[in-house]
Length: 528
Length: 75
Image 1 (cartoon, chains in turn green, brown):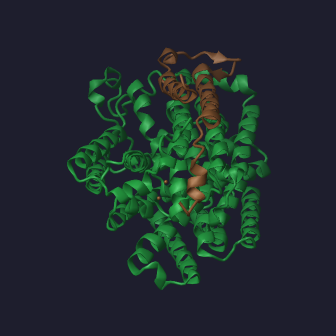
Image 2 (cartoon, one colour; image 1 turned 90 degrees about the vertical axis):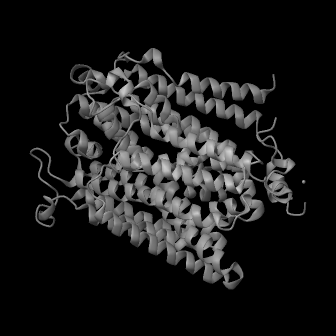
Image 3 (cartoon, chains in turn yellow, cyan; image 1 turned 90 degrees about the horizontal axis):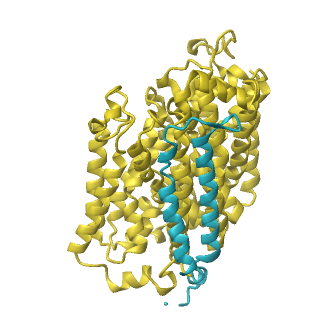
């Protein structure tokens, strides 16, 4: 009961922050959609970091390390630290400048202008939304899994609500957790738009980073100290201390295409546009790899320690490992509640930006684009945006009720793969003047086809590697190959090759477009 | 060599150093608790931050700010 009370207090604090932030809300659609482009370096860093780190960062990383060992960090975190910052520096700053100068609020607005095609938005929009919705589900379902793990029975410890939630063995049911966090996020986004999300993200990022460190310290202490915890792994699960037999070399290398997804995330694009100036990006570019390290190293260690206990959680339920570790090892219900709130903070700091961005896209890319901006007053645009945010929250929550049964991690990889595969399009848009409308259309169609082919081959959402038959190390366990190529590498290559070949075969963009998007001021960025 | 070129060479070097094949099967616990492969990649994250610090300091796009906010001059 106490952990749920702590989570309740945390959610009330978040609502209070939303109300406070709404007092700074300027009441305009520009403030609702891009915070009047006024966000400074610290809030931008926290907002971007909070948005990129979802349930996946705390829950997924612990679960993955529980199964695959320490290679999880090199596979996901250190690649991300390098590549995310590269994209912020090389792509994000350019898109911010173009967005500020030409008044863009969504990705589709930029791509429509850059590739001289109004209809491009109608092709790109459903693809982006289709890839973001699973990402939203990951958050809602992840939150449900965590609270269920924390409040459920474990060993001699009874469940938190044996009578109230008897049908769920006394644990808080995922549908209720999903409903509550969806409503809380909706409240502060509705009240203050992107600024509300940015402020909430700053608070939530601080909470979940502190939570990870506190969880790490307390769990280490409960296991008899750092040395005792790791030496138990050495005794009971030594294979978790190295990559050999867990993550193959080609798998490890080809995973680099996954973090490229941040270049195409529509919610991150919107975050970039909120920056007050280009200088606001400096702190984000430098601190992002360090923040990833601060969150991921403790979680990966907790994951391998769970394997060393051994915890006894089956591999297919890896996402409950962190929740079970907290509940099993920490007797203090207040601390359990605090840690649970931290995990929810990581999840909600992504949900808010995603809800906000889809609401903005429906408003700007579909309704306003079709009807015309001049048909609406600014007040009407604001309420249109709010209406779409409510609708997307309701639809996503409803889908989450029917999406139980698949692990959140495999869903995440396919979502990231789609965005990562489309990265050549945004890179070409800002660096290659010869990229054409036909090239982009062809690249979108080919990438969607290749993505769906592999998604289907994986059994619609499982982990999946290519060319596994070529590697001898898979012969011992053909059902769970550890070596192979990530499908996203092939998707990326297909997208890039199609874009280049078709662009070179078709008429280049007009001189006017070239001058608009490749002015001398942006040439050679970064300059010396 | 220009500072910018040095920075991009360092970034390329990081991509190579990420492939820690020499630690492939090393299960050493540094300080008695930290797996050497994990410590290496934590250090890699710090190195990445330092390289991006150099990029921000020596390869910053100086004219981009003025261009983005100057509506009088599509110069």
